[in-house]
Length: 246
Image (cartoon, rainbow, N blue to C red; front, side, top):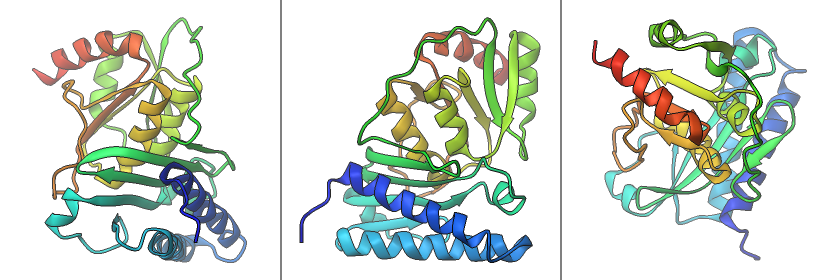
């Protein structure tokens, strides 16, 4: 069997799960749609990764914890459906996340958007130039942290509500917004693939205090995240440092 490149595999399986989720929307509705979508997309991703990478471990939002020793090898971190509320509400800002971590370091990833586009590390597109006069900051629509409103109080920013973390990160990569700020309530499967895609595109990624986002810990929680154009990172980090010090 021909070995598929990790970058291509991430994009391929993420796209397949996204297509399945789109199809399920014509068959189910309400909470049933979200439950079935989460489960079926998880099953598809786990099956395909086991087929192509049988020796790799998989950490999924819908799966069991992985043993600590898996962190020293190859670990796929997946979110079969990021933005379940948007998915069940029939909005279009949900996504599928697939990332590969080797020895704690991100090495490949893909975010498959509901729109049909898939952004991955296989063929990253450099960040486009920004012509916006105000900083546009993507924030969570359903779990909007108070910190982003405080940020708007100290900087001249436009807050742009969106769904999935993957959607918000891709919005930075495509130039729709300049930054994505999240404070609290995330897990490794929320951010791994988006961070991999953002880094490949040349974006800045860090925690809100400027420290590096890593995936070495066996604790799946990863509380906060900043993804932004590199030239605006100093301004945002300085403002966030002031707010976090209060």
